[in-house]
Length: 461
Image (cartoon, rainbow, N blue to C red; front, side, top):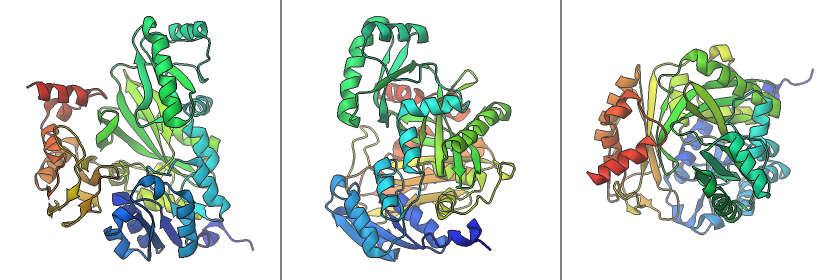
């Protein structure tokens, strides 16, 4: 008799190379070990003392401190996988996690890429093709065409008038808040397009742009999905990631407060159906703007998200393990009817940065005290004596709490932040403590612009 997927899945790989660093490398390593898998950790020269290197089965330095010569060096990573006998590569988030060419190179090398296929990454990585795919699947999208902007000024002007000002110009290959510009009125349109085209060309290698309606007071809502290779897809609930500074998330929570189940459920089901239509595998996140009771798709992240822990705590699903099992070929072990949402969760991103200027802060951690207790989780890779490098993202830890209600979760986060001490470097902990004392945030009366406005008022006071 032929083998079932469950019988043959374990044969795909037993060793995973973690193509990343920091807290996410430690998180992936923990998930692998709990699944009985061996791990290969990699590092740059700057990360030779990373603690997860000591607990990995293999630890290889693949290049100099700069990311371009180490964590973004595809050839070096593939060579490390071959030398260490890894059968799969987990890219984490950032770096090469949404690089279709890397995913393709991994598969061509006879290894498993723990993530979606290269074609899925390419489709969803281009914002125009992603929007077209979502419209075909019935996912609600921001008003605007699913085609790139033409070169003819008169046609561009007509498109903007049909959408209605204000509009936003975006790079088709953009992300992370780059390659976008808001146009409040017609006489600023062509200058904005010229500037954004050049920015897109330099940052993403393509000048392709598209145009959408600019929503003035939306919230940023995400829907988490997980899919297998056997025609199964579920959504695991929703998150609110509206607390952003310069388009970068600072605090996330699950579920998004004040959104009725009958409003969010059809959107979640449409996201799961969209995954089936594009043949998606693994975990992914649909990002939406939510305004006046309506959802508008903006993009899909084809990787593990920084904020996945809040969904893990409210859904009870280990998302990293589920992602790895999907890559092994296992059938999803839950159906949509099994998915529940219990309680409320917050995540604070603790960054090595000045809490007033937000400039990065490198140096040695001389003292570290982390909170503990029921409903408190800390994902980190640092310890007393750890040297924070100036070469990479400033994220050094994620503080996550879970409680029966949103109000109780906020109170628990206040206590957890009060019990978090990091000395030797500057961190944003004082800023986070102040934010969790804010009345409007406590009431859930915020949108994606709120944090920037809150910071301006604090500076002016």
